Length: 349
Image: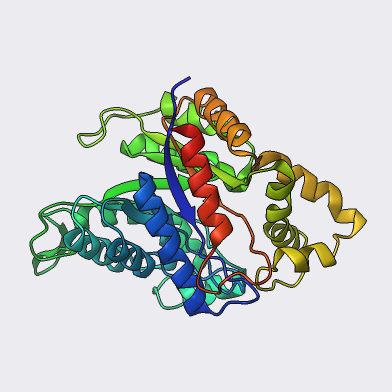
């Protein structure tokens, strides 16, 4: 089996011993590790009003990461387009591409990335209702692509055409990816000839079916003559399986709280997670989630990751390093997340 390339997805987790500045500093440090190890991309997610997640603004974070690294591609995984005016997104990523040419990816999704009330607050300033924003998602994807191009988009007005360009003189454009966890985005990406990522780290099911739909219905484009995709996975790597499972506890507990409607809090330390066992009614859910994550020793995770990539015929895996932190960890670092990247890269080299 061919060894897949590695990339990183970062939600910028906020631990109970961190403030937002600490969390961003830890992300900056993690990105530098990924850059030195030869990881291909570093993408930032978009989530809102969540105490354990500081990734609220992918283009701002992408700029922070790009400025702190030398060669790794940076981007969004992804921008939730219905939350934003298409021109704003086009301008943000066109400027990123101008500042860091050849290193920028724009991943776009249509989920809210938050609760309904926060989604309403985000979208109330876009001039359209929630349903309208989602329904017009394909049109808005087209608008972003066109406005980032050097020619721009022409609006037909009664007074004549009015051209909108994301930057005055674009010399290159970011690579646009569509993200999704359903058949919808797979079909849309195929129809537009765009690269596509199924959120297998989040959904856990339906990956093969979504990729088959995408590949089977793919319409070649000038930029992408062939379908292009990658795989995502939640990963924790440690010297022993027992240690890896222990480091996974804080994120497992946080995901269980999210799925069962419990109050959301900053990410617990490993010791805090161990001191508050899950209710028996939630243990099966935790085990089911853990079974889909790649948690274990470097050799075990590398083997499972390679087999997963071969099963889905992808040459790249984007890992979300979800290792927690033990008490006494420096607030501006995430050593267990950094070690996950180091150990995995070493095992796959």
